[in-house]
Length: 116
Image (cartoon, rainbow, N blue to C red; front, side, top):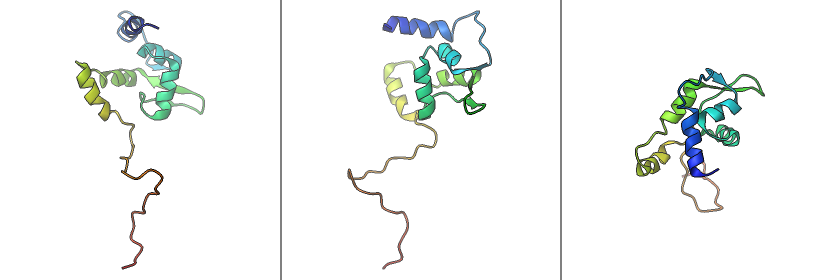
């Protein structure tokens, strides 16, 4: 897919006037709404970087339209430099900061062993 086709697909999906979208969508329809591939949406869900979702059962995932709109809204930028700065703030929820360690070293425990 060419860049211009990709841009048009995004514009045609979520912002398409007159198209009715359901309030709850399965991953295929949600990916179509966002203008993304289903594989990207599945991967983002596993990584914790995608839009919020509802797990109805072990095999049934739903996306709420309002969560998809929110996902798009927090990624809205005026320039590429603003978007580059914004990348740092889109970490998965609950991700711990990385410690600076030498490669191959084991982390030290955070407690005192009682030896003086």
